[in-house]
Amino acid sequence: MYFKSTFFEDYTLGDKRVTLGRTITETDFVVHAGHTGDFFPHHLDAEWCKTQPFGQRIAHGTMIFSIGIGLTASEINPEAFSKGYDRLRFVKPVFIGSTIHSEVTISAKEEGKKPGYGTVTEHVEVINEHGEVVLACDHLLVVKLRA
Image (cartoon, rainbow, N blue to C red; front, side):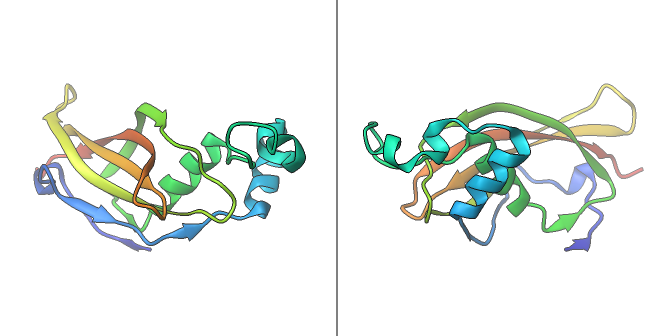
């Protein structure tokens, strides 16, 4: 992780970056359930899940969101801050042993209402080991203009 100043004008539509991968473990399921209080059987009851359509435990969508976004945090831009996330979708299930990575594409940018700032949208896709999108969202950044 390192600091890199990137101003609004430096972002180019279509630019893309790809993160390293991370394998999802049973420990991830248990720790996330403990942090959130989400102990639904879909995530933690292996025997019950055998009777369900997926046949195995499925990861918490919020955990995959957290891990997928965490993978993108490889550089700190002191000229920008997160405004939040839009259009979050859990597209496909993720299982214990799945390996995910994130792909971030600059999909939009517009000058902001506040003088000296603009908004940059990063479209984030979390991809499994089969090349399938399992989660998608838009990350909104407020970014300083080069003065």
